[in-house]
Image (cartoon, rainbow, N blue to C red; front, side, top):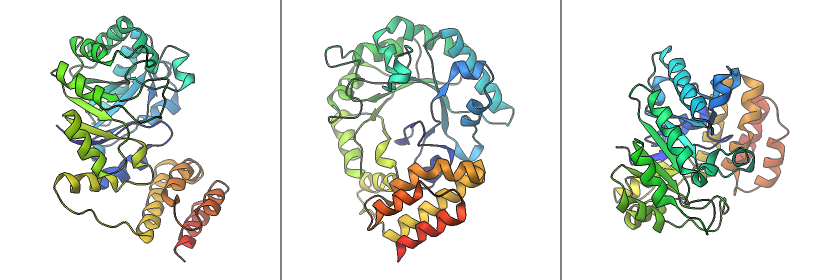
Length: 316
């Protein structure tokens, strides 16, 4: 099994950025979260989010929704779409952890942790429609601190046939702070026999090493720690192997930002590629001298040439 993966991040970990992270050692990728219902209704933009090629493997497709029939059919259609290009995704990942209100208010994402029965039916229906492709589940600790049920929920997912689970060690109400409570990952690991992936507060190689030691998890998934920092995967690998991580200079950061921009334009076209790359480019330059001014200008730049020149200006 892989040891280090890039966690799915809607609006951030697009195909271009996933490829950048893979080139720096991310062993496993997952698409941005995809609405199973939108897939069933044939939404073109939704299918675009699911685009992948063989160079990205191993890679999972992540879906979300709250209606078993749509989840099963959506998974089937996405796999059919991939197969037409000769691609077999590594898994269908079900999002049962997203804490964003526009998702949870519809009973999707982490809201499903309040309804294990429905969650189980979703897993069942998805598995029925994936022709043996593994089905995995992403979850949180529970809805809030008074209703942490991750151990029971993980056991339920395993009982319904999930191949592995990924745990973000916070509740829905905590969103992304305070610190993740890794002790719950360890508790789940003791209770299930399927692989457990730990997620939450991995910002450098030492964090990953500590998570492995403290939880005995099978793998780690890096989310916010990878934003503008694809080298975190090399850092993790080096730390696990007892090596000294390399120093990432300003020049290296700027040139990698430009490489990401170029790839985004190649995959999406110039206008869309430039606009949708702005968030990640802002993370690439964060912390560098002059970055507040440049980050403001990034949001006003609409073509590849000007964006490239703006980024290169930071090397002066």
